[in-house]
Amino acid sequence: MAQFDQNGNDGKNAADPFFDGPSQDMFSQGNSNEPQGGNKGQNVQPSSNGETAKRRNVFKKVLAVVLALAALAIAFFYGVYCAKYFNDDGLKSLLWFKERVDSEYYQDISDDKFWQAAIDGVEAILDPYSQYFTSDEYDEVVNSNMGIMDGIGLSFFMDTNKVAHVALNSPVFYAQKDDDQPMNIETGISLTGIGTQKDSLINIFDSETLQQELAKYKSGDTVYLRFTAEDVENEEQLAAAQSTVIGVRLSQYVESYVLYAAHGRAWMMKYENETDPGVWTDVSEYVSADEKVSGNTAYLKLVEFNAGAASEFTKALEQFNQDGCETLLFDLRNDGGGSLSVMQNISSHLLKNAASKNEIVLTAKYKSGLVENYTASGNDYNTYFNGKKIYVAANGNTASASEALMGAMISYGTIGYEDIFLTDTPSKDYPSGDGIAKTYGKGIMQSYFYNPSLDEAVKLTTAQIYWPNGNCIHGKGITTEDGADGKHPTAVFAQGNGVYGDPELDTILSKIS
Image (cartoon, rainbow, N blue to C red; front, side, top):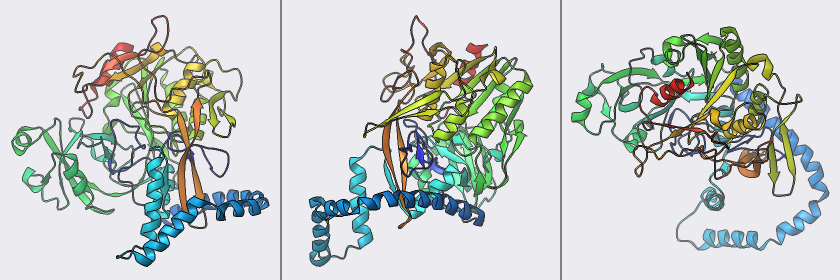
């Protein structure tokens, strides 16, 4: 596969272009300074389900067929290739070095360790989005790209014990029935589950302890987690803090990526297993988003451009029409990107002034000089949005596919810069914000290349990407200084990462109304 951010398509042996790397779960560390899925935290365990294995094998076989066809062309140049291969001084040096290590080094170094060290060395000189995957690691990528997860459904901001994301349709999602539960900072964990007394759990005050404890548990275990509404640093503060304890069983689930709310109700696609097409389900009892929107405003949060997100997005728009709302807040905060094909499908609903059914939504430029245009999969904007208004919420973790989709919406007049709300996050130097905010700034994409002979893969940055209007936001992002004639994105001050209740969403909704 390829991705916008951590995956992209070069038209060779990559199946589906992506912007970003695999999402992480679920006892996993998110990153408050990078797009989710772009960091290298603890990933999910590969599924052992037979049907999943079949789907994964079909996926790999498709790639193998592509590679086999490519091999016919490669064979024509085999003689030239071999001549270069066996005369490569760098390769000769590496093989000579290995021979010396094998014969002379005072300790045994296995072949696996030597070659892995060589691969790690190459990774070190590439950008942070390029990566080598072993067979097991690539299985995790394939599962993740199908939305198949194993865990409880929590990820955390980098180097903190603050919850960054509760995965939709995950075990922990269904454990948060009481809106008053402070599900934002994890301060305790236990496998024994001996009641809910605070002294029955291991106290968690930092990220290191959190990750050490989470690493002990496996699929099938039931763990008991304590959460507090505010940050605590010691036992004394913990004793005085409002807290709640829940029990959750680690298990396989299929993640949902779209949450929709309007008129006091919230909806998402519920999946029973990886073969279930999903049922559009009222989940109001599990979320508070339904309480935040009122009147003619609806709320749509897109977590990631992955798996069934495109069909889920369509279901949300059908609900939007059914609800008769006039305004939609499209929330892309903390959405680090995902599949290009998902972005193409979603963009088909969001191009106001598109003249045709297959307008360009992204242009990729490769090192070879190849320029490739990617188009929307259709154009039904008027079906859902004729005479209606769209606003977008974004922050510093809004990256790649999210930024590209925003670029397409800007290019086709769906939104102006003044319709974007950007989080002005507090920092050490600016505890009250500095009035300037931006998205992540990811204007490149990556491709997966699969090696069927060794069942391994590599993800490489392959192209720079441009909006339909020619803009490239790589290294810059969308900022509060963009726009013209005083029409710029609006900076919305955030209380900080992991603040319970989502106060910045409250602020955005108040500005819209």
